[in-house]
Length: 163
Image (tube, rainbow, N blue to C red; front, side):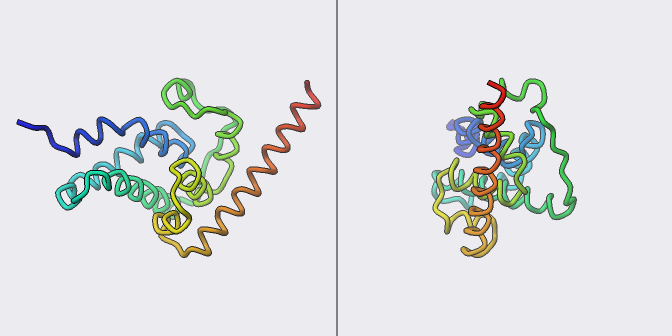
């Protein structure tokens, strides 16, 4: 008897989805919760997904929309200077400075940057997944890139003065 294609998809793409959730939330525990919530929401509808390749898009869209809904409800975020213990070993982000700069962005801007440059979606698809218009998505991206450039330039200046 063959396994459920959705279960196979989750097993194959779990780490990539978790990395995306981490970049959206900025916290390993919140990322796990977000991913699990998204998978729980998509699972009952898995039989309606005709193309197995589309499952990742459904899960990603659900993660972004769930995250935005949580943000709208709470409108507060606790940022820390350092990721929690064990975060780096569990979710490989690469450059810790970039991860910190991403965490400093507002949630919708962070989600837009992750979808556009980490997931490599076209801007129109970013707008669709964020549930906003194309000009709004472009504005989120432009503001996020400007903030990241300022943050990373400031980090380089600080490193140059210290080193």
